[in-house]
Amino acid sequence: MIKEQLNIIKVGGAVVEDEGSLTGLLMSFSSLRGKKILVHGGGKIATEMADKLGVETQMIDGRRITSAEMLKVVTMVYGGLVNKNLVARLQALGVNALGLTGADMNVIMSVKRPVELVNFGYVGDVKYVNVKALTSLLDAGAVPVLAPLTHDKEGTMLNTNADTIASSVAVALAEKYSVTLTFCSSIPGVLKNVDDPTSLIKTIAKADFDPMVADGTISAGMIPKLQNAFEAINSGVAKVVITSPSNLSGGTTILMDPETDD
Image 1 (cartoon, one colour):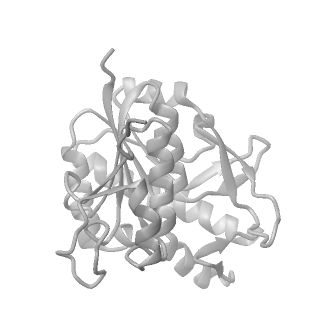
Image 2 (cartoon, rainbow, N blue to C red):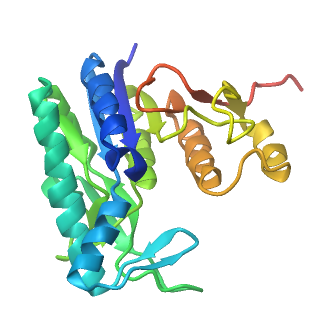
């Protein structure tokens, strides 16, 4: 049976926070045909709001420590300010957007990350994606816009990485749909030279990953992004793309390693 196409677009905070990039992304997203889901970040906006409210921001290796007070801030910013502004702008473009956190309709349930070397506080690791709920919304013509917030089903919201949410939702829905998962950032894809936007690497297979990390081609935040991408591909997602907001049909495509004969 041929599966229906589903596009899941994850847009990072750098795009959400730049008006030009955001406008391009929303225009591109609105023009996509068929079923689609948008997952967004918004870390810089949360940090700015925390500063205004006198809440200390703590980061370790680029990851936010979510104290009880910071949880209030990210819930307000991600689930309210950022999410509803995106929904309103998509509605203006004719997209029947519906803003959701993981708590809404129990769409995404997580468990609080256990304390190991670092106590990340109220950060959630995804354990369950409600396929039935998301499918019912998609079948009704709604376009879910997912904030990077989940819940533990015990009354507590949890801050959750937007890339992880996008990958988890893509994998969960892959049994029903042919899913293309697209990560949008401020660069056109994975670059051989980060200072040269024309040095785009059009395809990357898993076998390419370790050598490219070793020689520095892939570094910093691109490492976990690609790790998420390969995990999604290996878990049934049809296609993963890393690209810029204005070029959803281009960028770098992540591939399964080709099968070899023994």
